[in-house]
Image (cartoon, helix red, strand yellow):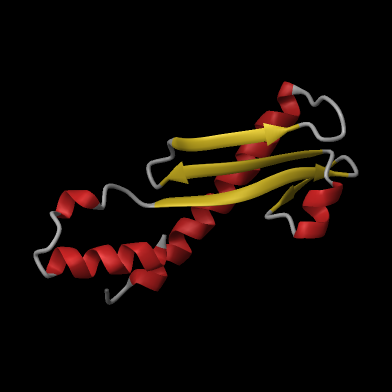
Length: 106
């Protein structure tokens, strides 16, 4: 998101694009279950071994753009899915703050 936002802001500032082209901030993260424990931002190895894994994309307003999840090792409960979505939201909120910080001055 950061590189795209910088490029779009430059084009908007130069009058080449309307300001409305940059609608909202977005961030994405992976979550999963490994050995029964929910994990945030899985490594390749963790993702490969996870019983459940999700990719979650959200806007700065807390709306979902995408939720994609699979029970690789078997079924999972609604309670576990809710825990994973809560964990993903927490991680995405941290990413959104880091993105804003990276964009200061642009």
